[in-house]
Image 1 (tube, rainbow, N blue to C red):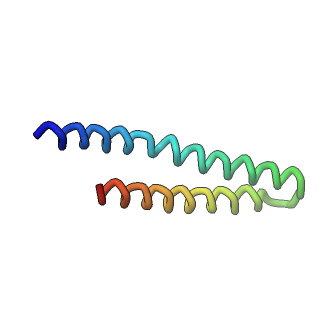
Image 2 (spheres, rainbow, N blue to C red):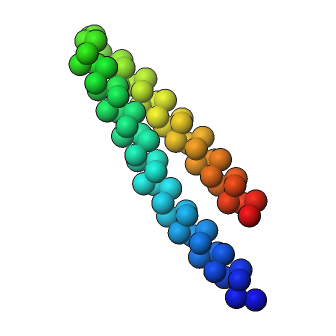
Length: 73
């Protein structure tokens, strides 16, 4: 009977890593956008905005897939 409790602790630890993974994905997208804005200058920070929005969508999709896998276990 102690097995489910250990499994719940493992799931909790996996959920606590989610914000850090989201931060890494979004920060990487920001850095890519900032690099592109320096390399190809424009009037607005268009590349940074596009990369940041893409990073947010990508991290949300990644998190949804991880949560779905955790829910199946």
